[in-house]
Amino acid sequence: MSDPFRAACVIGWPAGHSRSPLIHNYWIRQHKLDAEYRKEAVPPDAFAGFIAGLREHGYVGANVTLPHKEAALALSKPDERARAVGAANTLYYDGDVLRSTNTDVEGFLANLDAATPAWDRGLETAVVLGAGGAALAVVYALLQREVSRIHLVNRSVERAQALAERFGKAVRPAGWDERSGLLGAAGLLVNTTSLGMSGQPPLDINLRCGDATVIADLVYDPLETPLLAIARERGLRTADGLGMLLHQAVRGFELWFGVRPEVTDELRALVEADLRKK
Ligand code: NDP
Image 1 (spheres, rainbow, N blue to C red):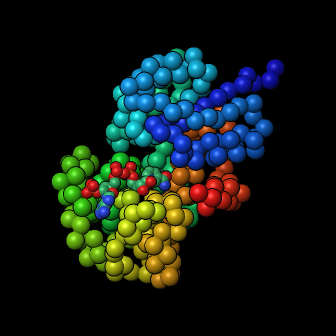
Image 2: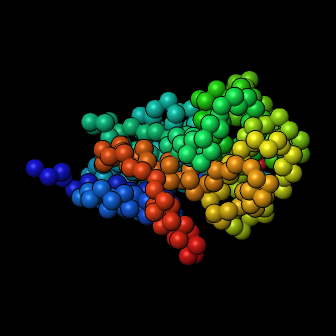
């Protein structure tokens, strides 16, 4: 007997900008599945009702994007990652139980592993810029890889302090003016702020780091941010935001459709072309 039709979706408000349908429908075609991945625009006041009826809407699971990630956590049974990060971006059924996870953690790590192999070998000190939702996932991921010192640099230092308190003494809050000075001892710099995104000012930083320092940027529009361009000019190894976006999608697809997909050059080119279109 052939498998039944299965559908998954991304739920957002708005949902229009999401590249998830492009990614998941590519994998659906590649694996010749009888399945579809859709966009669902759901306003905040309708989110709880939509989730309660997710299965009745025909879905085996969903991605959740802004502004619903915290609500998704509260309305499901989160795993340790989602709880630690305080936000869920992937929902899936385990029998009748609606579970959730946060795939940004593994997306960030898998992208670095693929783009900059052995990046964490002997890595003791990292500098993370930003203290928003993405920074939570990055800091949690770095702690999983046993990075012993994470300088968390944020414009509003109290936000960095709150995040440091949440994760313990390995995370050291720092003010925005310290961002270049802290790089001397860092093996990794991660930009999790929105600086460098199209329509935003570029990230102003002096890359006073050693030649072995890895530079990661979560911003993926543009594909090559000013930070990545400067790092590449200097010959530093880099990991970009599109790589993280693609890698974070792997786990959801596997949970819903039972196949672990691959991040291929063809998929990357497809999403790159879409990003260039707008
Ligand atoms: P948040 O809004 O939660 O956080 C934004 C962060 O940027 C805050 O730390 C904020 O500082 C900082 N910031 C904004 N403007 C400035 C500025 N002018 N100067 C200094 N700092 C500034 O956003 P998210 O954490 O959700 O997302 C951040 C970025 O990461 C976005 O570009 C998003 O697209 C990207 N992202 C990419 C992913 C991927 O898969 N590649 C996954 C998730 C996110 P303050 O606290 O002081 O306001």
